[in-house]
Image 1 (cartoon, rainbow, N blue to C red):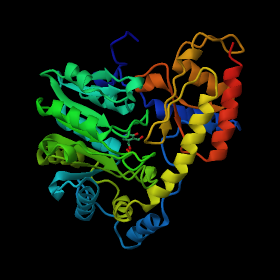
Image 2: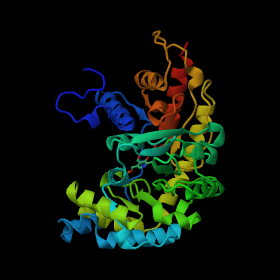
Image 3: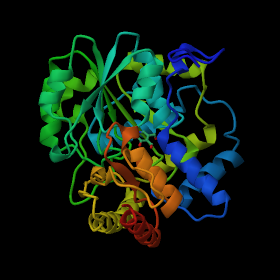
Length: 405
Ligand SMILES: Cc1ncc(COP(=O)(O)O)c(C=O)c1O
């Protein structure tokens, strides 16, 4: 195929589309398992906990009660109202239900925001390391993702100076994600305020992906930008969902809250594409959000123990340096010191992708290469798996890395 030209029949916009690296790793791990090989999957992006029973019961009751038909494309009024109450409770923000759209996951909300807002020529600022889907969703609209690197020494948080440098008259939006996937960084209140003050002077939209809001450790707090700077409410879209907080990744319910014109546009896009998110899942999501934070607090207690065990184990492996982030359920250690080494069979390791491939093949440990998140030289480890598996995985990892020449 000639570079730059799509294969026959496919639209130009998919020519450069990258499939999700995280899904790709999971698929490879599953393929090995199908051959009878036990893989320790540090690639997973979902809690290993089961969906709470009360939420399952709400889903079952929805089926029994006949909630099996279309709902309004943008979601049930009852769920929108539940989201309104949640945003008041947790963020102190007052929304009207017509400022809420329910989607098939936060990823779907983000995609619809991109569809609703971005045209060719628009620039969208994305701090790196970033969640894999942001740049691809921007590119799919013909807009330009502008990657703004962050420093490990600054906790992988966007600095006000870097933000100021990256903003141009063409900047249509900035995507913020705290707690962050893949780094686990939690933006401190003071930093968010500073970033917000920079953004006050630039008329762009702020997309705030808060899907990990409850996954906090060591006393860290989560802040929404519009809570801190109410002047930004009118051009911020908050994205969230039940996937991570209620272990409901398969139910596919996310939502967005923001200015009515953007939300109306997203709703129209849904009405012409997916229609409503699954009616049964919507009823279950109402039960989940109304249940508050007890369930996620229990998960976070378990994750905290794993986070420490995992970071400690990684630190002890020569060639890996790992900090202890305060959010999410990922660690993002630096592994570039291993580049230039060779596998026992003589293959050189030059990139995070080659290292991840070696670890999967020889240690049967799945991790996601940092390059997929715009940060070559790092690997992403999820610690959303039982502590025994973490320990076994760390042993296998250490042996494979020690075997590098
Ligand atoms: C930062 C971030 N945003 C959004 C999502 C999408 O979540 P959902 O399952 O609700 O689509 C994920 C899932 O991995 C994520 O890590």
